[in-house]
Image 1: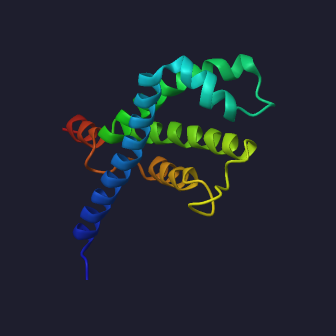
Image 2: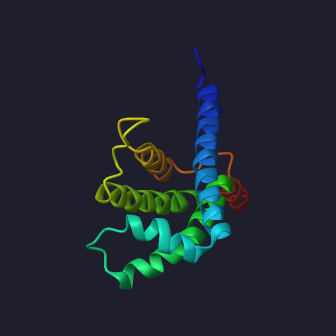
Length: 148
């Protein structure tokens, strides 16, 4: 039987691993888009997936800012720095990705699963937004040092 302290340690580890995996996903996705060229990303993948009803005046700044937001959110998640806010931004981004995938007809892949993996990332991001980054995070360290 696990004690409360053991359970807390497992929860801290689970939140840390969840944060790091989602953060690494966002960080590497953003770096890949920046390295290949933000304009190349915008004119290629982004434009192909953009819903028809989304106006260009909104889509253009969003598409150009997205790689940099992914890098910032990924780094913040990995560090646990403003963890709830970073997870909330990741949740919103994943909602927009999922809408774009559905509109483009790519939500249900032909092979490899019943639906796109972003649904699982969305659930994980939402969980982290609700629970916070856990004890092994910059946020936890800041709150401990502020209470002293």
